Length: 511
Image (cartoon, rainbow, N blue to C red; front, side, top):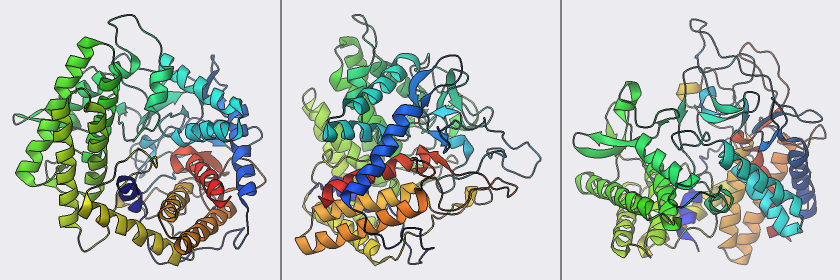
């Protein structure tokens, strides 16, 4: 069993015991073939009509937000709430405010595409080409990523993707949320670094590649010194070359899961670089980053979660992802620096211990949303069994539910965010159940697969109808801030592509 991945997936879903509204397709008996038909129709629609056909230049970049028309169309540009209107200025008034938990409009791309949010779409297109020998899907994915890497990188090396940013199809430039929100936040375990390496533009000898420039830009924009210690933040400036020295940037606000994302990127860039100057530069900085984490563990017993106010605490949901990424990065670094790799593995083990000690009486949860079944390594004895037990505990909780509960809205966005279920909840539940099924005896495996099929049917009833091949983003009628009904739409940020990838996986297990 891949216990590191098990840990990541086990804590994906915040579960409650309440029921839910019966979906349109409750009690259905969908087959693997019917799941595949729905998924293929979605992929064909995205390839045919989901790319950029706006502005003066039409590109192969996929749209993250589309109206479910025939053919699908980009929605109108967002109109943000005015100051003094009584609404949060990060809310929009002409589009529904439907986000994950407490996030608001400044967190997602509304004017075009976000490659990071579309990760499941790319993975699905590659899977479809591999499993059906239909080259057009992989070709469309390659074309989109190749264009992004050739045209989108900023002058400071950062990429316009992830939370806060994307690509504006109508204006042919980086996108951003509400006015003056020009942040870069790389909040993703991006699963396609190998594709980036394959598809990035060629450069001359001694020049930085896109991957190397991104690694360098992320270091310059996200790390700094505070009280003589190296610290890092989750935000960089999308436009400046170094971390700004004003406003929120001074507070840093260290999030360990972001540190894990950085480690994964930096280790990939270092391990695959042919540039001696970059390798020396990146290697020394990777060692500094690991040393800073080691110092945190010595002083506090864990990697610190630090708020913008400077308050230091321990976070289960932040520590777990960092432990996984440390181990993954260590495997890449080992051929070049075995001593540093061993320090990284030791750090990962220390974080395992911190998780077990602080969560012995409860099930930990993490914010992982993207994972690959083969990318994580088995944990050590006690940690492996601890994480393994929580995988099955979470899967058993799912099997006891009549329906996936509505997502919990955090206080930050409760006044403007709309209630209801979104596709990502079902994708996470199905993925967890498939993981549990793959690691179980036949009787338990059958039970988990049946639950996964039940939730898949429920999701289809909520999010898919004859109107469009694109899944809806809410299980009920979307509305504007003033209560005006709004047509159903597709958005990858809310998990439409994640759900379709999960259905494809489920179909493969049901054969």
